[in-house]
Image (cartoon, rainbow, N blue to C red):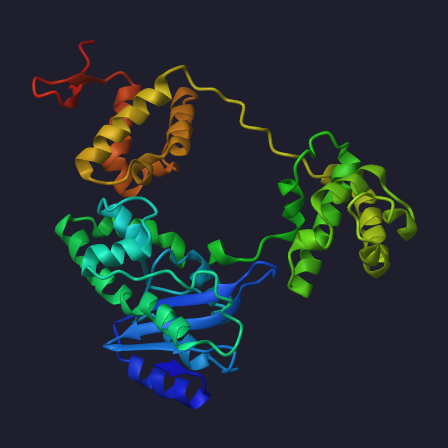
Length: 388
């Protein structure tokens, strides 16, 4: 079903309003724009599957009302970007949600498993990703493009049902709920703070404090301008010339054109704004000049992280879950660091929720020397109490 009129969307929304669960996918383009350009919305529930054209339909509020309804579970696959789009449109938290890629990892089907592979595993059907590079904002869309897009919502329903059944069978619904909290957290989908973007630029540690304050103002101007123009920030001014401008502090717009990689048209368009940003940076009081965070320089005791990683691998095989979902090397490093420096562990992911019971407490016991690793008569690696 292809919906390209407001009347058709209203009728569709009425039919879907009684659904307890909606499978949702979006098609978008974002190669050259700051924001996603939404090209198509696919939705399925209660035997209905439809593609909604948000380009032809100027008011998609009837669909967004379904998304905002807290009584309806919204199901996605690898849905972070879908949720980013919908959050920006809805302007409020979206929940509850379920992500089949996260669930697939939870039940041991593999990390970052593709939707096509999950569909084949669940239904035996093969969906072909023949339209991966389609420009979804171009019209008209062909019948094959629409059918291709509909598959992403159509098959999401049985995939969700199978994964939910598997999670219940393995008693892992609580694990899943903990992992999905981020997908319902509006803080994760807020626009980046323009005044923090300077820290993302490489090779800035050699700048003097005053020049760093200028770079902060320049990067903030560029980010805000990118939002306003809906374009990539680096298409306005790349990092390298922006950094050099902060270093050399030009006093007139004409000088901007002498910087390698700086577009002369941009100098004419934005020269005065850039000069104002420079002056604003130079006027920053000394006690308000940004200070870069210290680089991660702590090295844990040799071999300790490797030992814990080995146990995580063993435990993940027992639980039939991906090791990185249980505890990746970053989490292990932070955990070891906090233990060695005698810092509080309660705020760490490995000491929260389901991870604490399944892996965190065991890792802590290993670090404290209360237990060690040994191989039993069956060749299985086990934890054994320390002899001390």
